[in-house]
Image 1 (cartoon, helix red, strand yellow):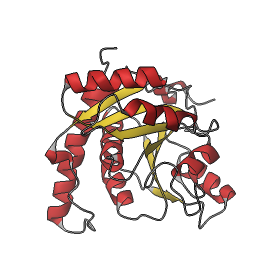
Image 2 (cartoon, rainbow, N blue to C red):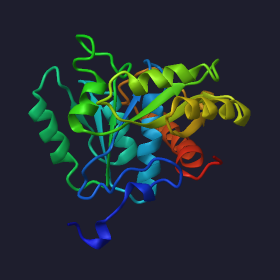
Image 3 (cartoon, rainbow, N blue to C red):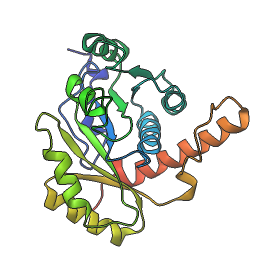
Amino acid sequence: MVKESQEKDISSISDNTIKTPSLGEGRGGYLIGAATSNSGKTTFTMGLLRALRDRGFKVQPYKCGPDYIDTMFHEMASGRESVNLDTYMASDEHVKEVFQRYGEDADVRIVEGVMGLFDGYDKSKGSSAEIAMLLDIPVILVVNAKSVAYSVAPLIYGFKHFNPKLKIAGVVFNMVASENHYTFLKQACEDAGVPCLGYMLRNRELIIPGRHLGLTIEAREETEELIRLAAKEVEEHVLKTTSP
């Protein structure tokens, strides 16, 4: 058991739909996945990390694969060192041990995936989906909704049912044009049988222009502003209660 002052249920993080049983002593968490690359995983992850941190939660970030740039973004957003999880270069047991060790004192753990959810070095081996199943954590699926509406329904349905061992917690839509657009997307989620967790509006200021090392003061200031804006968007349209 943890001390009463430390007990935090993930349901208290969100008044909307991002809910799982109590994380207890830092156990559990979420993997942020997507249908494809360039769907907005990193922007959403940075926003979620900062929004949860601003709410007073200790958030431990991780990154699938050997990426060292996204981990820098994670650290800026969360205030904690981000850790790589890679089943290609490390054993399953090592990945699980690292996940547990670095998140022991965390209220919630957030793992950012890589590429598309099932993309690995050999079919889905080494993929984000494999890591989510290995760690037994559900996936928040980020879907790029630019130039699409109800047609996301079969895509979401496919991701939910492709591998029954994988748990999809819900969907967050990125690049949403308007509330009316979001209404169509919510209907698609309902018909696909997957919770709709929220959305991020289309905003040029939320687009990461390109990967850089983030070593200059100017680059870090730009990244900090992007994180702040992303956190505001996540707080407004994901963590707060939205109309059903």
